Length: 307
Image 1 (cartoon, rainbow, N blue to C red):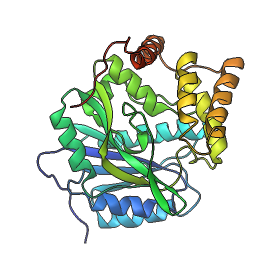
Image 2 (image 1 turned 90 degrees about the horizontal axis):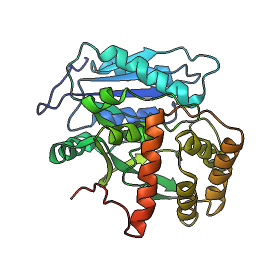
Image 3 (image 1 turned 180 degrees about the horizontal axis):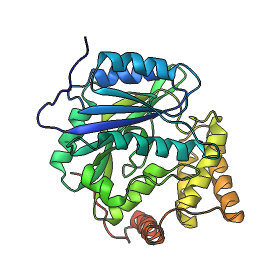
């Protein structure tokens, strides 16, 4: 028998998941959402043209739970893995227009949530009304151990992003960047529009495969591609250098990971890759990055930080 839609504690949110060849992981993701203490009004899982058993797995769960909806999207030729991912999210949102909700959650199909992930996230929104985008943090497996990913706390990974709906709509939604980075693009737009973004280390989930390898790339190739992403997001050259120096000592494979990323950035600069970020956002992020560098020497303006 199918479960009906449920509303809990007056929290109204929807989840959108883009899925492409996720048969290995998506059952774990679905099980972790089904176990949430606060379930969504609707969870739309968009099959972005998978060639494995992804569709069959989603449909099986959708048959059991009325609040899970399977949507198929035909993957278009010429779209990069990353831009196609964004178009899948846009397709998913079309199926939520009849609903009244306050929050939009984006969830990748290779994430295993803690049972109270969304409950804790909404507590953060309640505590900090200025938050427009927030997440927890995630663990990645290294050998037999689960290690917390090192991320800038102002960075909110798309894999587990939750938006205040007003923030999402004010920023215009994700931009389908060729090389990814749509989550960073939204963070930039959100802060430029007066919202705050933060990832909280006391809310932890598991990422079932290394970040950046969803298109089948090796880890070093993924880091190289991230350099193109940094360039497309108008990252200031000086900030890029500081970023790579910092990551060289804690991001595996040590030194080579950061070097690959820097080489990708340089190559994108030399080949004059297109920057899809709006001009005003480019100026904003570069100003913010210089301020962050100055802040290390206690010369910049103090940036927002939760209590």
